[in-house]
Image (tube, rainbow, N blue to C red; front, side, top):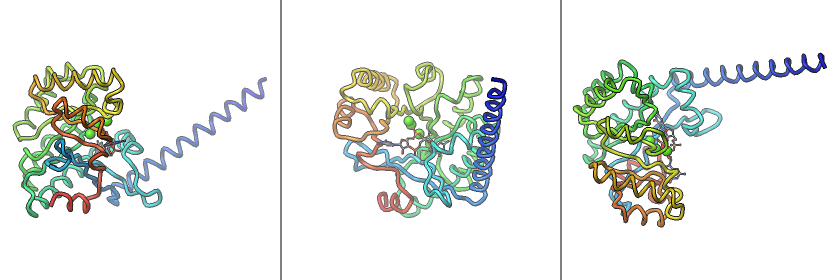
Length: 274
Ligand code: C2E
Ligand code: CA
Ligand code: CA
Ligand code: CA
């Protein structure tokens, strides 16, 4: 028995060692990816109910991995967070978004707004506001053309500081969207206390429409409340006409999902909006 026990320990040791090696490899790969600029931005339109009018798009990060091809953020964004790389990458996303926006404006589209995912660590970084201001200045972008998508993860350890930060962004014209609305525990208290202008109904609720009574109730209630509070609602993950029709009846403002458009690379998106 003693012997087996020892082997067990040994086995776990090897496993730990191996997972530590894999972790270090991934960390190195991601650090290299930052240096070699292997990231790119995709854009997914948020349209009106006809799917034709595109006034806004969500910016979505992709990693063009030299061996594995296009990687989706679920597989690497958590690791960017873990290794502190989300700050440089997040800054790059903001700059690159402004650069694209300027280019499209110069090509004749002055309507388009971009909605950018900002991670909690990025938002809470002491230099974040300064970086945003500098970015708008350098690229000559009006803040009204940007929206930041934040999740409840922005932790509300310091509510007054968060409110201050959001108000500074608001004064620059930048709107705040609460992403994945309804998936956390404190969505409603967020609405009460923070200067939020947009709600993004999470795909997990849209998915069950209209047959799942629970999803339907959540979406309906959210929509009614948002109208009362004067908030813009974006439905995420709209994949079919049945979902669309349900949301249309509730006067949802904007629609994002595969039914109308998948996220697309810059060239394809440019063709669509120019
Ligand atoms: P999210 O912010 O909730 O983004 C929406 C996700 O839903 C995107 O996945 C989008 O491609 C996907 N989606 C949109 N419509 C549909 C649909 O009709 N059906 C289905 N099945 N999916 C749909 P994506 O691009 O893989 O991004 C996943 C998550 O990674 C995002 O979730 C966000 O949390 C994070 N992420 C993406 N880009 C960035 C970024 O630039 N910065 C940060 N910090 N996080 C990002
Ligand atoms: Ca988002
Ligand atoms: Ca979302
Ligand atoms: Ca989501």
